[in-house]
Amino acid sequence: MYSEVVMDHFKNPRNVGEMKDADSVGEVGNPVCGDMMNIYIKVKDDRIEDISFQTFGCGAAIAVSSMLTEMAKGKTIEEAKKITNKAVAESLGGLPKNKLHCSNLGADALQLAIKNYEDKKAGKVREEKIVEEKHEHLHGETCKCPYCNGDVDLELDVCSSCGKVVENCH
Amino acid sequence: MSVTNLDYISANPLLPEVHEAMIDAIQENYGNPSSSHQLGDQATEVLEQARENVAHLINSSTPEEIVFTSSGTESINHAIKGVALANADKGKHIITSNIEHNAVLKSLRRLTRMGYRISSVSVDDYGRVNPDDVAKAITDQTILVTIMHGNNEIGTIQPIKEIAEITKGKDILFHCDGVASVGVVPIDVQDLGIDMLSFAANQFNGPSGMGGLYVRKGVNLWPLIDGGAQENGRRAGTENLIGIVGMGVAANIALKEMESRVTHAKKLKDKLVTGLKDQIGDTIINGHPEFSLPNLVSVSVKYVEGESIVLMLDEENITVSTRSACASGALRASHVLLSVGREYADAQGTLVISFGRDTTEDEIDRFLKVLKESVETLRKISPLYKKN
Image (tube, rainbow over all chains, first blue to last red; front, side, top):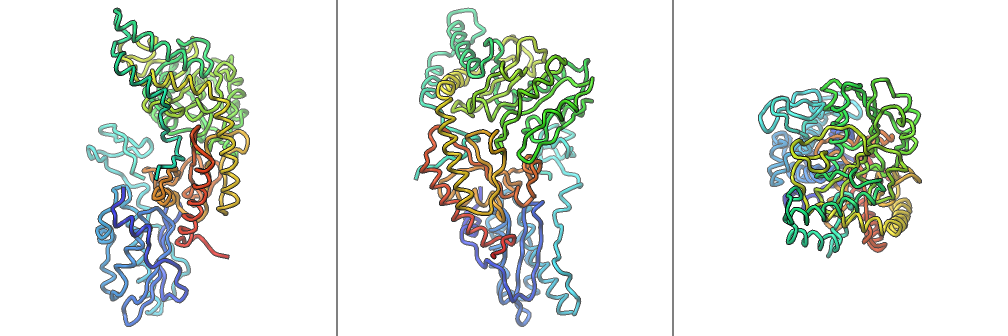
């Protein structure tokens, strides 16, 4: 199901653990959606000197966190801001379609950590425990049928146009 | 290293006798039971022998009450939609429970679009339905009650006989989803007093893609598949004789071995539950401690997510199932686990460990050892795990 790179990062995750003296933390996700991710960064001379993560989630979520920390380590803040969810997924050799949402958390957590860092530097008071409800979009929005592009009836999980069962809309 | 299969509810190996009978059927019984010549007669003979074996397994009064289907899911769809369509003039109200399998849930949701009304009764923290709640939900429009026997996620067994007492004499049919139970624990349809029972061969070392539906004589339900008069007019289409033969042999052996299988499974379950509590820590055993399937243990492992545990175990050649949303494809926490009061995070960390006649105590020991290591590793990564 997963690529070799994903399995390698899952089995041997890099940069694991809470960072006690982090300059900033980005916390995203919640157990309702299945994943939670904390990214800790330490910044020196505008560069991410150290980074670590904690993740509650599936194999893909753990691999994404690990890869993300590898990609961000040593980068300047400006460079790190350019790391996207797509880039992380690509570096992992791709993710199964129904796991792409897991990769969304990774870069989001990093960007949140950077934002918190910049806010702190600018003197803004960081709210304790910022948790972004990033999965809100998964509910309520219409979903398109992968077979015919019709609208999916989210109560029945079937396409209103062709009647086929579609399960990955939530 | 050979695979330690602790995911019997998903798939379990064919018994050698089943395998052999199916090969014989492929080679010798290519006839169509509907034909009125010797090839047809020969096919009919093995078909009816299998039907008799299956009837015995659930103590049906006559083999005519058994309909062979393609799966437990088809049987469930047939029972629910068949009754709904045949009895629409009597009423359009159906009663079910909050912890049914998706085959029940989705069939009922589909019917709501055709004007049917569904009442779903809740369960207690062990996953048991209170029969009084079923009685209270009955209206003069109620045509069907559908409640499962053993739950496929947490193993809890429902008070089916008590619920059947309620529907009896009320012109309300009672369908029981017995897919996780039939062939695993003794089931007697006459003693239970139910009108319909769904089951599947792959739960008792029979072939996948084979199901059965018990329909008590006199029950009015429409076929799902129209055409010829196969299966005593309940299901049209040329029979899957090879699968049916396999199911018949598997049913026969399941009945013979029932007592020893249950004893063996109970021993393994006790060992597993004790091991989980003592060795893993921070776990919740789901389901009822007494009224429960002997071949299945559901455990919520706190602070970690189920799919990642499954992956780690798989690397060590141990297969188990998870109820985490991340692994299910639907990306939603299990409605069964939420119904018995699990928190979202705990539902995400839930494993279903299921075993069978060939599972050994050594395999349970090995599983516990590898699980302990995997959980320790994953808890180190988890932001939810706070070391004391």
